[in-house]
Amino acid sequence: MAETTAAGAASPLAPSWLGVPDDPNRLVPALWAHDAERGPDGQLTVAGLPVGKIKAAHGSPVFVLSEADFRARARAFKNAFDTAFADLCGGVDVYYAGKSFLCTAVATWVREEGLRLDTASGGELAVAARAGTPGELIGLHGNNKSDAEIARALELGVGRIIVDSLDELERVAAIAAARGTDTPGSEAPRAKVMLRLTPGVHAHTHEFIATAHEDQKFGLSMAPGTASADFAGAASEAAASMAEEAVAAAAGHDSIELLGVHCHIGSQIFEPEGFEAAAVRLLEFVAAMRAAYGVALPELDLGGGYGIAYLPGDAPRPAAEIAQALAGVVRATCERLAIAVPRISIEPGRAIVGSTTFTLYEVGTIKDVVVDRPEGGGTAVRRYISVDGGMSDNARPVLYDADYSVVLANRTSDAPAQLARVVGKHCESGDIVVRDAYLPADVRAGDLLAVPGTGAYCWALSSNYNYLARPGVLAVRDGAARWIVRGETEEDLLSRDMGA
Image (spheres, rainbow, N blue to C red):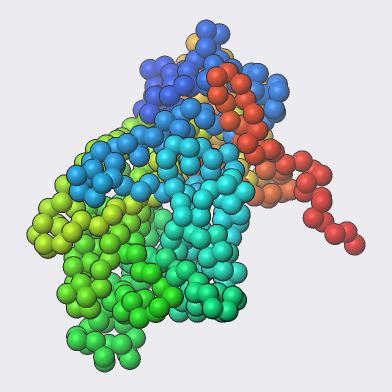
């Protein structure tokens, strides 16, 4: 017979980091938008709008985003880094990483709050253009840009193309040069290029989202001996790097304006040390390129990857603290190397949009399942709470083993806390929304659950698995909600089905 755990007591199935909450109704502030709170009737509200009204008017599942919180977080990053670097390079260019979540409304907010926009595909460029983002405020990333994407970026006059390989550098140079032949007697503007380097800094993050080690698809290696044989033979040292070869090649193209270098060490990083180590390596590279080739690299992009709180115990660093730490390292390193401080840029995405949003679900089936205890022998009961979404609207748990929190949203409860696993409705055993959480023991079908921290990489990674329509995104401000991305319908799904 399975051992039962009294509600309110710690479950033997709970991970060691998860404690039984004193009050399962409490909202942990770090996980939520600043204007999310419990209303007088116990309902979760955002900007004064109760989730019951959201559900009644817009259905579920649905992404609910606080516009005021998004704008506040964007301003906080801009102000913190501008302040920290004011006397070094006059401030910082903050590029919002559109890959985390992008639509025309968000692109507009980004511009209005004084930020620039980082894109990673032709589709994201299209959103930026539709939103009226000036080309000079746009950057284009990507490890496999098509010729059409490069040409479109040049037509839009983007402020930077972040080149990811030697092959791509040659294609950008050729496409930019060819544009000058379209109008006889005219000279096309040069392509503004940054080189993405891999500094070999290992951030403390999931293997699949750590992007600065050597064995991965992004960037130009800084490791000695990685240059091509032809360049290594011509260089002053045989152990030249691919990054060094790229600088020399870019400087030799009349159609390229080499702005500087770029790195990105990973995602969901809490501590500043990785960013600091990457900054030192790149600044040393900047100094070496001036000494070896007389090439100035006036800009340095230190990427993004700043983490947010997904769980009650998470403690990400405030933007101001990271900015001050980075500014100190940049100042000291430039003084040591006797070089001018480059213009600094950064690319936060998750840290701006992640906590602005929660996903609202409706509870369906509830099932208690007997499972083996992880240690000590015997069995225990795990509660499975199924909701009306799942891996189609949040793929991160199955992709990265990502953990989330959850609260009962439509009411408060005096029932004791009970360990539960919140799962989706897809035909996959790995369709888990929240792996482990304590929820009131009286959660029942028809209740609403809210999962915070879903603003980044949830809608962006959403799919139509099992032919579920993707949820829409509601922006809430001053007690009113509006669609900024409408939810799909079955008609949308069938519209691309060409029939027999």
